[in-house]
Image (cartoon, rainbow, N blue to C red; front, side, top):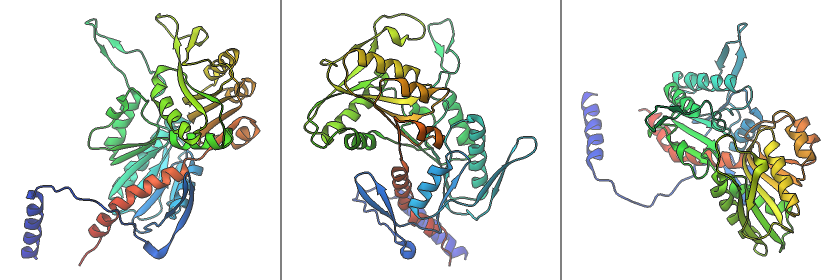
Length: 396
């Protein structure tokens, strides 16, 4: 036994000392148990073949509908995990199945009640790690505490500031609990690139971009196949210009006969304090009049800003106005504001689980599922590591 152990260690050292060589990598998709699951994804049908022994999907109490959709597409079903509350409000977690040596994906979205769901996620990650999971990936479709500024940057009096980031603080909490990877949806605010610093280099963060999905969906749903009119893609602010350009590029490919252009709202004066949307002016490459407009946003919160922008575009002669937003909170009377606004259709993803009755009552909101795209991403991550899990669980 000692001789075999020494030989194994020596072989591992020899492999580490060998120089890295670049070679073409072919991803092998194992057909475990000959089980295929068909997923209706954008761009065609995708077939998943899942390893029931090594892939686990566990969900918190937020957005279980999306989690179940993803688990069903992967062919594994949701893992057995019971969440509850003690009399004093503390969270109880009962993991009902074995996860030792498994590739576990814990799904939780940072929607209301935000803090309860975040605490659940932290405890779920900790529970799975303590149960000896080989790798734990937190799938957070809507990453919280990043859209609203929490406090004012602290001035030092030396022409410098201490910057605050609640989202980064939450990221550190996940690291302490033992998360190995993060998957999110449209996490990084286009153009800023600061969210890549939420986690240390040891925790890879992968964000699913929704521009392709929505550009193709809106091209099919809002415009006829041979649409040859003028379409203006509008960014509510310069911070979202990069995302708007990417969306417009895909939309132009999907509608080759259309004239697709991009513009943004900019503030007309340089002054301190909150930006007053009513004083904004639109700088456009071409006239808005007679054009169909697609407003590209990142988050719909209360809907006030969106409704104001739509009215301004209508005053400038826009024809039909469509909205694409990665996330939608629909807080307060948001849905009522959107119903009264001069907007033809609002396309949002299901990163946040909405009240089905409220959404069904709206004549303008359409929810586009990102379940197939997230399932493909999780499957790709798992297949890349499936052989590693099998080797480490094989004895004798």
